[in-house]
Length: 384
Ligand code: NAD
Ligand code: GLY
Image (cartoon, rainbow, N blue to C red):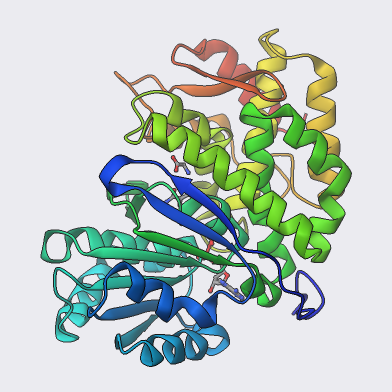
């Protein structure tokens, strides 16, 4: 398996702290190295004398669970661990119900914690279970993928998928602490790391042109495992997300910008059937490219910005075109438009899109001309 980097260097970085300021529900995101072995102390400091149940997946468990369990045992708070199958299919009612039952079997009470150890799938599922268990128990996120460290573990969106689409059942349930240990990224396959990198690029594209400039100059360090570069990329991403969530926790306005590339991306992901042919971050990379190209077609975005985005995503090795994944049949406007219509930003049947005036300047467009959208999709789906 190709890993995202060489093995851990043993180098220690000063821990960076990003605070998500939500009044009584404010919390910290800790970003650094060597944090997982300290998780027990960090969590027990939040709620002395309480217990914690870990939820993880079958890929992460053999890599990182023993370290976390030892730390929680040392702190006197391990109630038990639950290991679920890895993969998007676990974000389902079928896994939620037995998960809740097992948390109750472990005796998790209102004052105890659910600790999500894994990528966005485990964070979203365990987070949703924490939001409904006894009407809400404490959630600690320990994200182990880049995507989860820069996006899904922060901001409180939790949920599962249904036959109707992705993330359609869920709750806002903020964590009490996020522990992003950069060491856990050493075991992440390169393809997963790069998929997470798409969400890092997203922050530059939606609101921080200077960060995009930095990524163009430093992406090789981030991808190859330079810890200082990784820490910077994760910190800036988390700060950007924290700023938006502080202003618009429930996505009544500006938070929708975090969905840059997701309207197209979610439709492609649904088309690909969540099979691993197209990872979430890869779908977002294609979706962001389509958002830039569609914005250029609407005379909103300069062509040179589109070209820069395409060049960067391609240099990193991310897909940029509708046909950049392996499939037996290609998506068409007829297959994608009904999937786009399931998007959570649909209002009165009209999908809202996140469009751009350029790199670092995204906005919500609730009234996209449907004839232009169909013609655009027609060309993109046929590879033009
Ligand atoms: P994932 O959780 O499926 O993880 C990807 C793969 O990597 C899995 O096979 C997992 O077992 C494995 N893995 C995780 N950590 C590892 C490690 N350190 N070493 C080796 N393997 C490891 O996927 P993801 O990309 O982390 O998250 C995608 C999910 O996140 C989607 O369901 C998406 O909808 C959700 N998401 C949620 C939000 C939010 O705000 N809640 C935001 C973005 C994405
Ligand atoms: N990932 C989108 C959001 O958290 O709002």
